[in-house]
Image (cartoon, rainbow, N blue to C red; front, side, top):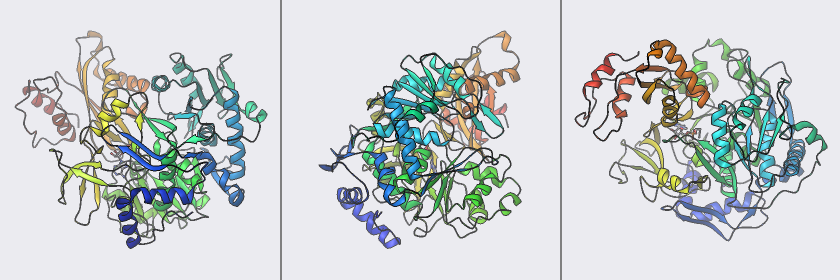
Amino acid sequence: MNYYKISNLESYFKAYKKSVKEPENFWGEIADENFTWYQKWDKVLDYDMINADIKWFVNGKVNIVKNCIDRHLNKRGNKTAIIFEPNNPDEAAQHITYLELHERVCRMANVLKDKGIKKGDRVCIYLPMIPELAVSLLACARIGAIHSVVFAGFSASAVASRITDSECKMVITSDGAYRGNKSIDLKGIVDEALEKCPSVESVLVVKRTNTDVRMKEGRDQWIQPLLDAAAKDNVAEIMDAEDPLFILYTSGSTGKPKGMVHTTAGYMVYTAFTFKNIFNYKEHDIYWCTADIGWITGHSYIVYGPLLNGATTVIFEGVPSYPDFSRFWDVIDKHKINQFYTAPTAIRALAKENLSYVENHDLSSIKVLGSVGEPINEEAWHWYNNHVGRKTSPITDTWWQTETGGIMIAPLPFITPTKPTYATLPLPGIQPVLMDDRRNEIEDNQVVGSLCIKYPWPGIARTIWGDHQRFIDTYFSAFPGKYFTGDGALRDEVGYYRITGRVDDVVIVSGHNLGTAPIEDAINEHPAVAESAIVGFPHDVKGNALYGFITLKEVGEYRDRANLTKEINEHISSHIGPIAKLDKIQFVSGLPKTRSGKIMRRILRKIAEGDFSNFGDTSTLLNPEIVDEIKNERID
Ligand code: WT7
């Protein structure tokens, strides 16, 4: 594979320049040289950034799974495609070759077809981190079904709303999931969700925990007997470049999650190109990304990006703390990992534990370290660099989003000099700009602005499922003609970018993107609650944690505040999932509001952070007296 030889800073700048001056030639050559097409495109790019109408490789015909698996079979048939490392270290790891993966994906594809799944149908996948999860994604993509993976930590009602929104016809799940020393009843959660999902005709169940589950006659089937009976070859569907590949939900600033739609060819080209360059992947390397396939990081950099490059990718079922805090280092040592990609929240949590956990392992196989999901603070960066990278493996701090499909700003290892807390330079093809409040482009350095991207790249999401207007409103309206990321950033004197955090009502908790609005909606459904406002505050492990300010109705039976705090968190858990629980809940007699009734979150954010220095202009408040009350009763 030859994605533009970027071997030093000079060739990076050369590639970058070409990608800006001749974007169609730049991406056209990469697409031409590195993939198998049924039919080439008529035009590389067609776009309208006002109406958010973006098409790459127009009229090209391709199947991404043929590119992930089939075309490697000659050269890499017996190479390991996937290493499965189970939750329990005493259970043997599995090595799945490209040939075996091909057979498993084809069998699953045939099962889906037998069950009536056709090109364009939506399939919800709710599985733990086991090989069947990757196989399910690839089986859908092989037959042209659109997968919608829901992270197996979401609650029944969150699963139901995602299934309903995209009218999935099928759910693929498992009896249960192992997670550290716990096991989770996934099938039970699906059963509860499906009470509200008339679109679902069938449920296929993978056996993982061997727990008793209810199988609904006519709807639910164990998957293994069907796979055993299925043919082991399958003719892949010919897909248009712009046919949807998958939907992945991300939270937004209103209650309803946004079903981000990624399409086939652009996503393929972009994830393959970025994987190769950012991780400096070489043919015999073993690559491990610790994310869950339920998030975009797992889609792009556990499944698609690595397989498109014929790489060996690890699927890890467990957690960093089980059986003890050395698990990550154990797995690196055991499988001789060369590229390790994880999140700052995991680094911070592990850095708090005894150093001997990491020091007792041989980490010398590591060549490149990656970080993703939130800004990596200086302390965590140095710990990662000193103890995991042994000061010899460069850290690539990768900034991107569910919406961007792949990594956008990141240092290229051994090429771009790193600088702690800086994601550094944009990849070729990515044109970031910083905008001020008056919608002007900021030319100066050392000024914070709203981070936008002013030109399309192949991996950009094309729409929000069923709501293109919301796509335009959310991403293309604040700065017309540009994609608005929702993040703030700073640019230094050499052009390095530092992401300063969200500038909207999204809080990144442990690397998870949580919109405050859906959490508020959930809390407000509790019978005792009148109104609520959630803000983020800095947390030394999670990066940010959630602080809720809540006003109550006059309900006598809810006098016990401690109990009510517990109940509200349980309520959030069952409506969204445990990741959205609040760290602090303060009951207040009112929320600071403007005369037009808008909650002044800016003030609440400052109080939550414990910064009482400057509340800014409070003259527009309807009830300025409330600020002192909230401040005085702040939870430390
Ligand atoms: C938001 C996107 C795509 C990765 C998984 C999260 C924050 C992500 C970084 C980074 C600073 C980062 C941003 C972004 N973020 N990576 N390296 N440095 N911030 O995807 O759930 O769509 O969240 O995560 O705020 O907008 P996501």
